[in-house]
Length: 142
Length: 324
Image (cartoon, rainbow over all chains, first blue to last red):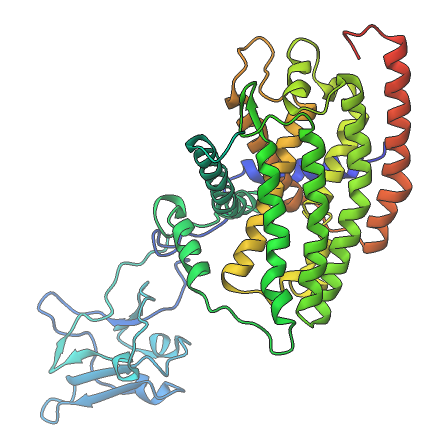
């Protein structure tokens, strides 16, 4: 019949109307991210706030983008005095997490770190041998 | 109508409010409806379901800079939107909402509406010409050609209804459908032709050749900004309202509803439903080519509309008066 295609097309769009929308309401609803998603770095630490990092420098030397910078305590070389991450340079490749022999580093689900200043992208995971807890966020994955 | 009484002023204010609200709510409703047809959400962020988008859009349009291209014909450029907006607004005067409830219950209401709509292509052509821009010129000429071509089948399809009612008064046409079946049942061919022609008259997809974004930027109103663009848009949405109102009155019984008391609410619902269905078409159909558009009018719609008139005339002779 002539015009059958037109009616079929109208039917298809009408079905779309009844179907739930595909739009992700991002600022209002957090997206469900896969568990393997790589976002901002964080450091494991014990209850006293002592970081799991032993300042072995493996991640600093292994990082292809020179993101990580560790300062050792000269008297106690197994304690990091500061652990700085320049996330503006980070490509989230995950090499540091894989390299760490103490499994001190991990990725969090936090990705909302847009800043006005470049310098705000630099954050410290360890400051004065205490873990700052920075980067510890809820993982929104399954 | 004697003198300029309060009654007249109130009616004019009401009709103007109707026109402004149609354009405002029409834009919002269109964005929302088309969004949902495409599995999106439409406006969402400001106010409840993005409802504050309406005043925001209005303020934006009013406060925008009014740019006049250097090489444009200044006088025509300023005046041309009026040639579109004024006939659109004037045609609203013929609207009847119930027997006795009308600004002017014209004896030739239908004729008046068509006459006003005939002025609009002049405005579109003027807009296209005045900008000194090839896109607007093409858009304006296309609009003029399209509107003139589709007026003929529209008039011929409406003629079937006028013949069987024996009046051009919109009140009489709607009242003729109060007891008998609606004209969509009595003259289905006329209904299809009239709806298609109205869709083309108001420049809506699939007949929106004058504004074909993929070819003509935005068609005849490419160079317009600020409130002048607002006027053109106002006219377009008013034409959409008027087209839907005409289909509702001529073919869908106007304010009548079977088994229920007659009320302007039915007319309103039918008009809104028809306006929404034009948005449904916009979300579904791709636009026609210019030559196929013209072919459809001159080679299909006009001959079929003429045949429809013959059919109606012969049926009027054969069938009892109650049916035709």
